Length: 122
Image 1: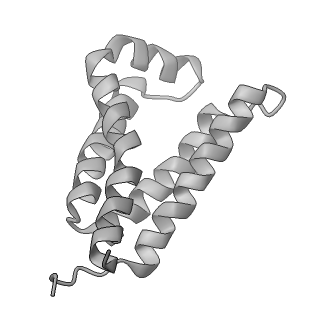
Image 2: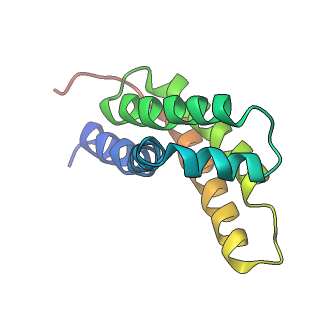
């Protein structure tokens, strides 16, 4: 398997969680907006809209390799911010696992930022 194929598989796997999460938000906007508001963040409706754009739009862009390095950087930052905002109760093992998952995703996305190239298949 060549590196372009492996890179594509890696991007699609990283993108999957964002696409599914974005779809989930679109399917249940009231619940998502309520959850954002309950965390103490201001402008929950605006945050909801931004999250959908970042997750769904960014996830699809990453999967297809469109502006992959920029998109991966945005998704990495989004992952760290959401880890800090929503998964910061480290006394709760589930929250700690979600925090670490977000941090690990950010690490994978930074690998895309560092090493992705859009070379045509030979």
